[in-house]
Structures are given as structure tokens and as C-alpha cells.
Image (cartoon, rainbow, N blue to C red; front, side):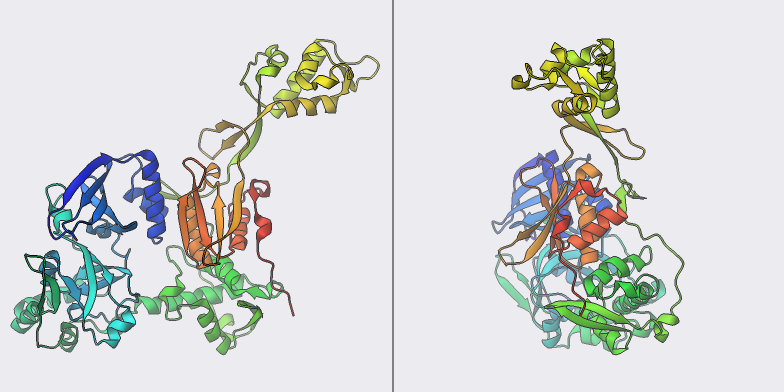
Length: 585
């Protein structure tokens, strides 16, 4: 897309509201990024520009530039990272590897053909047609290009790694990186591969450089690109593909040298499964929804610094994993209601449970990101306050307060009591009654009551006074100055919505007043619920975001907000919409 020079339409500094929206869009498009990573990528105060341009083919593209480098670009409402961003987050996208001599072809506008792929010992990443992928070079995990998969991984393997693999969107050294208008022309960084040791890596590079046959293979890669006139050109080679030839030459390391990522995830999955059964699940908890077991128990048993992701295991789905555990007679799973599975029995005497060694305790409470440091979330102290309106100024001015003064409930009571005593309004015959003078009558009585009510009990007087005052509130977070605002604090609102596809989504609003970052909450819920989440601007609310989670996930929200974040229930509305638990047979 950026193989040739582009035309810039505008270059402007981004607005504060657009910056927040971009941060939400990034979090939704790339859920693998944590809140702190999103904040670093889309900084809050540093210079950030929006560049609108037309590519040489006429495509309208919006590029976001930070520190002189393009970090993201938007095409047809889809957000894409640049190689500058991927150098900081090399694992953000599924990654495929090719050979260094191929980069020149990609920069010239070529699409990457499947014979140019290097197949790692763990196999190719699992992708679907249309997925966004990153391309790296042998010996370096720093991405050099991004492209759209032309077919799924299964189709790639079925084809024998022949045909077009990826339609390239952007490459290192293209005009987006190296034009005079964009990019600081940084050199490609070196990020060591996960699977190769440095000595082995040097040997691989030397063997490629010294082997003429290998050099010929690289020159003969099947690539389809553009000639100078924009027409398609194709270079074909009659030799066997590099992926086959490299395996025969032993360029890939021995798979037994280290466990693959999939094998590591399988081990982590089983570890969390056994830990949860041994330490958390009790007989009284059964039957237990499998989704609840995963979100409330297995995730909390995940070691600190690790992330449990069933999709990256060989099982791919929780149901498939639990089927295996059922075959091993550790648990019994049944479908108590249509489409909803529950664990109905556990063999706690099973050798795998009894022999499981509980790891050292690690904190499982959720954290929020603050700056570059993780800190446990502490709920705010919320205090109801009262604001003096114009029509009650006379009642409060004797105590030194004026219109708009903010008072606590105890202060209001003291002022009313002192006013009554100072003006000799307490009934001499009944100390529980207060005589109403003209100021009290004007402040607390309705017009039709002013000639009929002469006295009021203390409790009625105070109640009426509080009702006439305007509401306000104070929110105090640990280590921060209290925040005072007029009006009532909006509760966290949880609702269910029906989408066009007839699927339910859970919508959460008003997280910000309670010190909760919507992007952070969305990331936690995505992992716990194993469901897609998005963060979007809340309709009708200025500078506020809402979180959407696929399905009815109110049980997970209830546990997160009430039990882990310890927020008072009175500040959360919509918990009653949680799905009813499955009935025991």
C-alpha cells in the first residue's frame, strides 16, 4: 500500500476527546495489549498527530504519528499497527517467518507467497482467512511487515504451501517508514528468537550466507508483486520450496530441545485445573457451571506473570479439555440445561488431584495499572454531601455559609439544631417539637402548608431540610485528594442488549467515577469469560466509555465488582439480570 509515494491531505494535532477514543479503539482492536501498554502507545500528553493521506492507488488512509514515527494507521475503519509499534510489541499479531532477501521484494509491493515461509518446529500459527498477521525474518523476531492472510493455516498446509499467502499492507522501509514526511528511518532492531539459542542462530546465518544453493533458493522464491507500471509480475522457480529445503538442511532446531508454546499452555491449563479442584471447589459448589469454574476458579489459580489462554492450547475449547478430564474420570460433566454444561461430580481421591503439589501462594486479586506500576485496586470512600440552594441561604447564613456551600450530613444537623436553640424555637412544653419561624417556613414548607403547620418534630424537621438541600458527593481514593461534585453519583450500570445477530451482550457503563479503567476491566473480563469484549464511547455521555462483553456475563461482573473490588452493592445496578443457576436434578 505504501510501496510508492503518497499524497498528504492534512496533518493536525489530535484532540483530547479523539485521543481517548483512539485509546479505546486500540484496546478493542488489540485485546492482547494491557492498559499500561495502550497508555504508552497512545500517550496522554505527548505530541500525537493525525495525518490524512491518499495512497498511490487512491485509498484514503488515516495515520497516527507519535514522536515523529507512525504508530497506527486506519483504513476502511480498520486499525493496523505499524512496524514501529510491533517492534515494541512483537507478539501482538500471529507471526510468520520468511528469509531476509525476501524483504526487498515486499518493500517493492510484492505479496508474500507460501513457498517463502519458514515452518518452525511448533508449526505455523493458527489463523483464519482475513486475519491480520506480522512477518519476520529468520533470526529476528522484529516484524518487518504486516499483511492479511489469504487463506487459513489449514488451507495453507492442505495446499502444500503453494500459492499466495499474504496480501501485504505495510513493510519496513516503505514510504510510510522512510519518506520525508513520515518515520525517523530507524534501523531494524534485533529481537532474539524464542526457540533458537544465540550460538545456533549465528550458525544458521553463516550457513545461509555461505551456501550458494541456498542463496539461489532465496532469489527464486515465488513472489507476486508489481512492476514499475503497476502491472502484476511473477517470478517462478522450479526448485522445491524453501520450507521443504530448509528442513532437509536442518535449519530448524530440534523440536525436543524445548517445549512448544502450545505444550506449555497445555501444562498451565492442567495445572490451573488441578489447583482449582484441590483448593477452591467444594462439594457444596456442585453442580458448577463450567464457565464459572473457568472464570472464578481456574483463572485465579494461574501463576503470577502467566496468562491462561485456552485458545492457545491443543484443546482450543474448555468443553474439549473437560471431555478429556472426564475420560480420565477426574470430573463428570453434564448438560443440565440446553447448551449449558456443568461439573456435577469430582473425584477428589483421584491420584492426579491427591498427588498435585500446591505451588507457593501468589496474589490473585486483580490489579489496575497506574503509570508504569501495578497497584491493587482499592474501592473509593464515597460520602454523601449536601449543597445549600438559593432559597435556603437565610437558614444557613448565620453559621457562615452561603449559596453553593457544601456540607456533610452531621454539619447540617448541627446547624439546624443550633439555629432552633439560638432563636428559642424549641417548644417549652414538648422538647421534641420545634416552632417554625418565617425563615423555617419559607425553607422547608410547601406554600399550602405555611398557614397550617406551626410546629414539627425534630426528625420531621431534619428530614424535610435534607430533602430541600441539593445533593452532592465526595469520592476519596487512597493517597489522592478527595473529589467533590454536585449531584448524585451515577451507579455502575449493567444491562443486557440484543444485537442484530440475536445474540445478547452485557453492557457496563459508569466505571470511571469509581476509579476503574474500562479498558482494564474489559481485558480482565475477556480472559475470565473467554468472550470477546469491546470498549466504545458511551452514548449520551461526554468523555465516558462503556464495555461490551458477548453473552450474559453478569455473574462474572458481580464477582469482580462485589467480591474482588469490594464495591458496595448500592453503587451497582443491574445485578438482578444475571442468568439463573442450573437446577439440580
